[in-house]
Image (cartoon, rainbow, N blue to C red; front, top):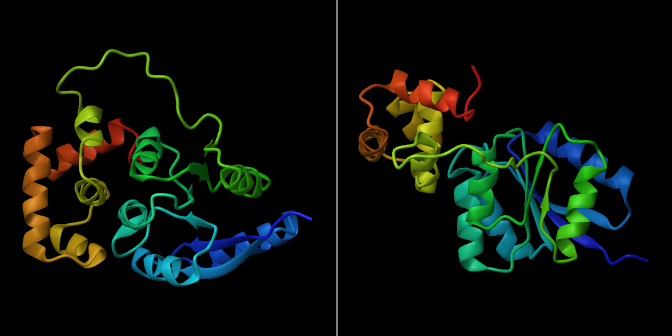
Length: 215
């Protein structure tokens, strides 16, 4: 009999979490969701108290968000097993999650058998990236290439950049990320400076061109 794998499931939608639990219970008998969180701050607490074998985590959540959560958990435990299960299939998200310390990345539109397969592979010490998510880069990049600049953003800069591109103003971003308005305003200034733009419309255009947000 396979050893039981305890999972911490992190997603801000209760219906989605219920669906994942159902999927896992139907697919395998050795994987059990032992704790759930709807935001990163709670996930960090539960990881410390429950010590699950693996965390299955969304990226888009209120509060500190998925990328910052990964970073903070890895800072506490470099051996933590984190599988990102996200709606985002763009390469920039995959690379940022892996760079933050995640050991796998799959999308929510993947086949049902992918989730348990990914969990088992990671528990065997392997990395698991859903096929087709990372494409070879054949183009030549320049020092001022927008994607290079975005990839160099801190986790917080990237979160704010993404929300700006989605039409959030500084007040809404401050509320979404639980930050002060002045802190967000300073980040916005930094982001514009790094991208060499002067307006939010230009930021949105760059985000669409790089596939970070949809039209």
